Image (cartoon, rainbow, N blue to C red):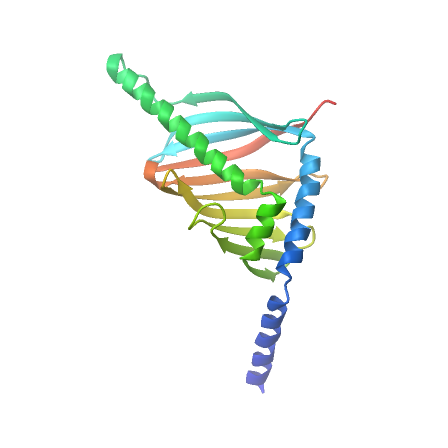
Length: 221
């Protein structure tokens, strides 16, 4: 009898999972995300990033974020500081050139993470059209491959009640180098969701980037 109950229970769970309408779900999530982004357009904030190489902090950057009048997200690097001491002469120039290349690589990595953070309605529809979706304990989880480049993978966790993002994890390529990242979301007391922290792993550089969004302030209209 217990085996029969177990089989029925498994069958019901599988049937419930199969009944998830991924197209409608993607529309609901994109609608909730669009409404949330409209609220987020009222804010200006800063991202504080620390680049750690071989377990040692090497670079700190501060980037300001805002939306322009067309609704496009605008980023502006406002500060960068390295902990690496400048060497004299030619060695110093070589060091400076390497630092600039690394800074460019870091910026590209952060831009890549933004592509997974802010996804358009079409991108979400495409993602869910090939995603494996489950729902448990009030959280929807979806995973799919080949989002932006062949072989990349993205897992999205969404709050069932609000359809707002809780977390995104991805693995991708940057200049043919493997990279992976985790984006976490938080809410203001008003319920507006926003990206809170990002962790990027850059194994080819033996580096990790820890980034945190802070100093949110409402725009003066």
